[in-house]
Length: 264
Image (cartoon, rainbow, N blue to C red; front, side):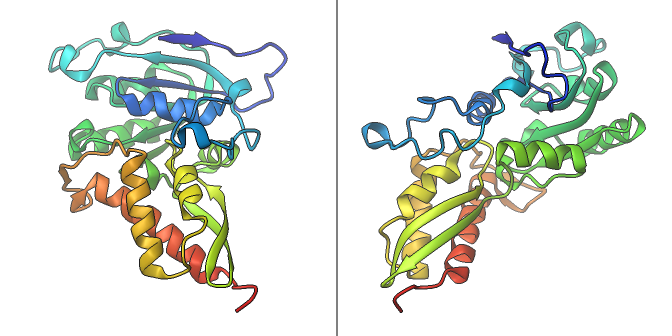
């Protein structure tokens, strides 16, 4: 799938493109565009909590699904032959690409920042990541590798501006408590896939007790469902699914700790 929706007269806006071979790519792009109806996590009780909060529709230059790594040769000598043409962009998001294609991105394209969410441990091994960092540094490209995607921490001003515009990054919540019950939860920053919005909705009405909050977040995170792998990632010493769940639990507990019970 390829979409070219970059409108004329928007040259001053942050521009981004996405290349992916995994369903996480579709989720992330859909969350960034944030068009009404794209999120079906709450089903018929959806109240459109995230719509009109943000949208990067006018910033999207192109999104294209590429062949999965296993559908290409183990070693790709001419990676540019397997990559689509793209105009210059500020940010390129690369998800689940063949290692040789991934390393070539900052050389093939005119980009300022490269974001690489990692949902499977084998998407990028230590040698490839080191090589990728070297090439990006040589080409003055900000590189952000997030294991998993919801551990996204901006590595520079361009990436930070992109994350701010899309309200994405390491999950952050703001919580209101009344009479010992969570009455409202605002998303300050969501996981790139949008899971944090679902978690926030599930927390409303829960007792303001750490154990209750943890259990609710864990259930919501699994129900979304999370696409991170259950295989152990040696970089983090745990499964990426567990890391993603832990990041959401930490965000909720931090918000609970900072909340003030108005009628306590």
